[in-house]
Structure formats: structure tokens, C-alpha cells
Image: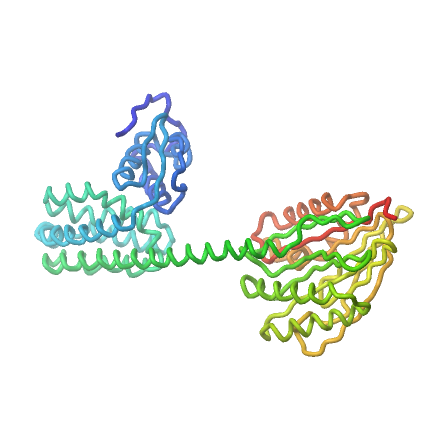
Length: 479
């Protein structure tokens, strides 16, 4: 039942009924409700819907009453609407009935519309224009008007009552996005109907209308099937994301170090990698890597890289270059030709503060050191090919003596290759300039400063790559 309300409760920031944009606003409201704008079980104030779609309360209530008819909304007290899942079976049954009533309506309307189809042609031409502009709301408004015109011309009150009881206009508006891939065929299927009615060929027009609706029904069934597949894939991706998140180490406490990391994949799962490993004695392993490619393939190689590195590093060893060489051969044997990974791997001795490392084609991490008021940046450059790219690659190990207050900043391409709207990359130079201004920053503050600078540079442009950032600081009281 429609709730009553006082005029003083209505939102003034609305599109006036009958004014420009009213029909499109109403159509957008319907289309988005069918499209899942609100979650099943979600309760929403009517005033929020008024504000969101700039519609008066009476119109909002009319639309919600139609949705209540098809079981997608319950109107509750205190001017609230509770949303429910659509019922696909009911939608399909309604379209089957619609196909029959439009066939009957087309046969009867031919006598009235013979030689008089200018209004139908106008709606069809408007549909074509709306399609070229990708204006779904305008397209569906003229689609509804096209079919309503034929039904009204039939003069059959029974058909009109069935049309209204099935909420056919609501269903047409709700189905448009589900058949978006088929819109050229959907739009052009109206021209033969116009031509048959113009010639007064009622039987042909009726069959064309039935065929049009049944074709729409098939498109909806296909869209529902695709949607089910997409939901299954989405669930699988969510599980894969949870599994991948378990690969990353929990908050690590390394004696004498403060550590902070940031990771944001481009897709649900990604190919960036970082790890901390507690080794023999006073040593800790520190790794960061970037797998070529995106998505599932990159994530699988990332998992292989992590497993290979851990299996080798957790055994006693003295030759870091040889260790990475063994990892390289394991990954090379287990990965396809087009996938490889850059890797920076270091082992830190908490007693001596010595950092020994191998850089296998990765972005050079930076050691930031302040001395006598001057900032010195040391680049831990590559000494070998990326992992898994060539058979028999060799690697070089290097070392750097860290001091209290030093900060190690390691990152993947998603940091330096972030782009603004003009296609310009943030780049290594901006990163280095920022590091020179961040004296006495802790790792958390450093990460926040870097991400804020990138956000400002890109002006909210879409992320283009997986993003990983690792900042480690040697504590001042490290012994």
C-alpha cells in the first residue's frame, strides 16, 4: 500500500513532473533498481531516493509500488523501502505473456495505423539517436512509448489491463541494460513492425511483434546465464584473493627495524610479491618482486616464486648469488615462456646491520641516509636478469652497511609508473625528491607521503598496475 505523506516532507531539489528530464530521471531510477543499485535486504529512506534521483515523493512511491507488485520491494513504515532480489522466473513468464498480448494488439492496431505510423517512426528514429549517444534512458523511454502507442491503437481494454497488471513498462525499462550487447538488433527490429503497420498488414505486424518480444526474452535468458557465470567467477576470484592474501606475511617484528608495507593489486588478485623470512641465527630475509602480466597467471607465478625462494632460503647457505640462481632455475622450469618476475632479495644481519642482496632485474630500492644535514640516496642496482626469463642466468650479490636512522625504500612499477591524465609517469626522480624532504619520517608516515603525492599527481586517474611499497627503518637504538 502507498504510504501517505505531507507536502512539507517533500524534497524541493527535484525534477518537476512533466518538466524536462522528468521521464529520464524516472527511467534511470527504475533501471538502476533493476540493475542492483541497492543490496537485497537493504532498507532505504524515501527521502534518500528522492534526493538521489531528483524525483518527488509521489513519483518515487508510484515506482516503488510497481516494484512491490513484482516482488522486488516492500514499503515499510516511516517512509522506508526494503529491497529484494528480482525473480528471474517471474520476469520470463511475464515476457511470454507479453509476446502473446503484443501479437494480438498488433493485429488490431493495423486498421488504425495503416498509413499513419509517423509517431512510431519518430520513436524509432529517436531510439537510433539515443543508441548512437549511448543514452540508455532516452532509448528505453522511446521503446516504451513505441509499444504503448501500438497497444493504445488496438483499442483493446483487456490487453491494456493485462499490460498494466504485468508492469510491462517497468520490465522494459529494467531489461535494457541486460540486453545492452544486443541493442543494435533490438532497435532495428522495430522498423519491419512500422512498415507492416503502415501497410495495414495486421497478421504480419502481430507476428513481428511476437518475434521481437521472444527475441528479447532469449537475450534476457542469455544475460541471466552470463550473469550466473560471472557470479561464479566472482566467487572464485574472491576465494583466490583470500588465498593470495594468506601468502603475504603478517605484521613483522624484526629486531632493530621498523617495517611497514602497502599492497594494492590492480585486479582482485595480482602479481606483486613481498615477504619476510626468519632465517638461521640473527638473519632475516627481505623480498619484493613483480611478476610480468596481471591477474591469475601472474598470481600463480608469484606463488611459485614465493615457494621456490622460501624452500631455498630457509636452508643454511652462504652464497646469496647461488641461492637466487637456484630459485631462478626452479621458476624457469615451472613457468611459461611469456611469464617472468623481477626480484630483489636481501638478507639482513640484525647484529652487524649488514644488508647483503641480489637484485634480479627489479626497480632499484633506495637507502636514504641523513648525515651532517645532507641526504644521501644509495641505489641498490640490479645485478642480473629477471627470474625465469632465461635458462642458466647468473647473478651478482652486493652488500651495504646500514646505520641507525637509515631507511630502505623498495617498490614495484605501480609506484613510479603511475600516470596522470596526460600520460606522464610519476617517475623515479619525483620519488627521490620526495625522499629528500622526509627527514625523521617513520615508515608509516613515509608510505602515506608517497601515496598522497601519487594521488595528487594522478588527480584520481585509474590505477594501471599492481602497487607494492615497502619501507624499513633502522632504529636509532639498534645494537
